[in-house]
Each structure stands twice: as C-alpha cells, then as structure tokens.
Amino acid sequence: MVPLNPLDWFRSRGQVARCRHALSSKSSMEEAAREVIGGLGFGESDLALVFVSSHFASDLTRLLPLLQRRLKAKHWVGCLGGGVVGTTSAGQAHELERSAALSVSLLNLPGAELTSFHLDSTELPDLDGAAKHWQDWVGVEPSRSRSLLLLMDPSCNNINDLVSGLDYAYPGLAKVGGIAVPHNAAHGSLLLGDQVVSGAVGLSIGGSWRLDPVVAQGCRPIGPVFAIEQAQRNVLLELSDGDRRASPVACLQRVLADLSDADRELVQHSLFLGVERQELNAGAALAGLQSRARSSKQPERAFLVRNLIGVDPRNGAVAVADRVRAGQNVQFQLREAQASRQEARQLLADSRDRDPASAPFMGILFACLGRGSGLFGGPDGDISIARDVFPDLPVTGSFCNGELGPLGGATHLHGYTACWGLLRRDPLESDRQS
Image (tube, rainbow, N blue to C red; front, side, top):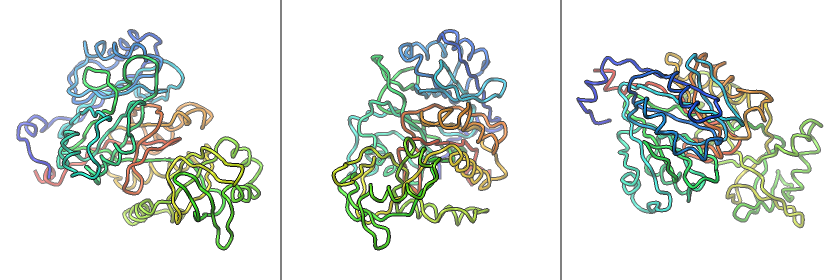
C-alpha cells in the first residue's frame, strides 16, 4: 500500500486531470519554443514531457530556459530524438521525421506520486547485492511507484546491466522508454529539471496513475521453429528441425526456398531472428488467461526479435544480437508493414479490452528510427493505428536509437519496435474506498 500524505490528498481532492499539448515544426529553436508556449497557455502543471528533434542538438542547452520562462511544472523530463511524436493544441497528432520539431506536453495528474531521477551509469550497484542498494541509488521506494519511464543517453554505459538492475529492484513495475539519438555537441541528450544531462533519467509514476505498456515488435515468423544444438555466446553454430541438423545458413536456405518472390525480396533488408524465451511463453500464457477476449489466432509461443549481425561463410554460422544457448528455440522473422500494423492494432486492442471502461489519458510512444514512413510508406503510421483503437488519443514521444519495454515479465531493449506507455488513471483500492 502506498503511504498516505494527507497534504497531497487534500491538494489533489476534487482536481480534474488535465493534459495540454503543443507541437511545432519551426526551424528556429526560439520560434519553436514561442509557438509551443503560445499553444500551451498558462498554469502550473505536475509534469512536463519534452521531446525535441536532433536538428536542435547544438542548441539543446538553451531549450529549457526558453520554455521555463513562461511554463511552470514540478517535473521536467525529455530527450533528443531522431524524430518527434506530438499533438497540436488543436488535438491533431503527428510523427515528424527528418525535420526540426519540438513537442511539449503539460500534465496535471491529481492523486499521482511523481519522482524524477538521474542515474550515473558508470557506477551501478552490484547485481549480486541487495535490491535495497539499487532502490537507494535510484531514490524511489518500491511502495510508492507503479511504473517507470526511463530515457537513456546513447553514451550510457552498461545499459543491459542497468535494465536488469531496475527489474531486480522494482519487480512487477512496467518500465517503458528509449535511447536518445547521438550527436556531436559537448553535452548529453537528456532533459531533467532545468539541466541537459547524460547517463539515464527517469520518472517514477505512482499513486492513482500507471503506465500500461504495449510492445509491438512488428515481425511475422517464416519457416519452422528450429532448436539450437550448438552455440557460442551470440553465435549460432548448428540448428535442428526434428531429426534434421544443419548449419544456420543451410536452415535459412531451406526456409527461403519456400517463400514467395515478394518475401524473398524482403529478406534482403528485413530479416531477423526470434529467440524463444521461457519467461516470454509464461507471460504470454498468463496474458491469455487474463484476457477477456483471447483470439484463437494468438501464438502459443513468444519470441524476442533480434538483429542478425553476421555470417561466417566457412561453416554457415550466424551471429545474432543476443546471447543464445543450446536448448533454446529460434525462428526466422520478416519485418513488413502489414504485419506491423496487424500486431500493433491487436496489442493496443487487447489493452483496450482489458479495461474497456477507462480509455488511456494519453499515450507516450518510443518508436524505432526504422519505423515511421520508412516502414509504413507514409506519415503517422503508429499514431494512426493507435487512434483507430483509441480515437482522439493525445500522444507524445520520440523516435529512438533503441526502445525499452517489457515482454513476458522482463524488461528488454528492442530494435525496430514501437513501445507504448499508455497513461491510465487507476486508483488504488484505498483511494476508491475513500
């Protein structure tokens, strides 16, 4: 149970949740800030979410002072992105890619417990130590948090250990976020308070609010499921399908022989590998049991999609961007627009159906730089999918250099993925009774 602060309760009682958005595509930072401020109006907020395109990287240290002259918020969190997701003051949502852009959202969240924090990734606590060491390092009590929004600088050290440590310290809490894009300026890519920083920054969300995570990997499987017979670290050496054993390259050639011409064309630039994880299967089974309307087409197996990063022509071995071991199962995957649309729509619809009486207050999207118009063939691909499911949903976010989201009870770094954090007002039982 979250400890009660009577003063916070008194202040928030009777307040109405409010979300103000503004989006600018002006090429000058001063003009973009002025347009955003004009669209947002006045009044203090609990939280400001700021996402800015890499076109303003060299001027990033000037952004917060420009905004904070006129806008007031208790917490400021944001990052530099390869593109920006935002909503205009008139309610139109857009994904602005490869152009100057600034998105600011101001939120009033009655009953929320918000804590922002900065993490120095060069000095992580010991993963073999007590979870309390991690909690003290972050500065957030688990009992006061229900979700974590996490943004990482591209220079952040030990990202996988950091994510594992946060899962260790805060089990069961949804963690959603992304990696900002790199740049050549002598400062970081993250915004926190009134500073530009590196490392990692985060926002703990507790009280009556939480993030409902949706992770869309955007791939469809091709060919059979293969068992790993031999592997070294991240290199697949031998796979099997029933009684047949062969090198990964030989197995892939067999898969390619059964594909259509169109799919063979996709293989040249959109081939990935799904690595089966037992915890993902357990999570998928649990989600199926909890779902009120489980689809008969839902897969019985769950795979974490990873990049293929190299081939050894001498022995047919394949390197994958993840550590693998003998005994695991893998399946080749293709990334294409239609599969991405169908998966994202289904996952968002599942989130809607789990809580049909309460639409999300807003959506925070962290999308891979490889999605957007490059994948969907036109603008606003992920936003249009979300608004098919949640009409008029306000959105904000960024195109990232890597996305962070949970699958099967564990948090993972993803690529080519759309990771949504749907902000929901979900009062605790003690709040409902009061």
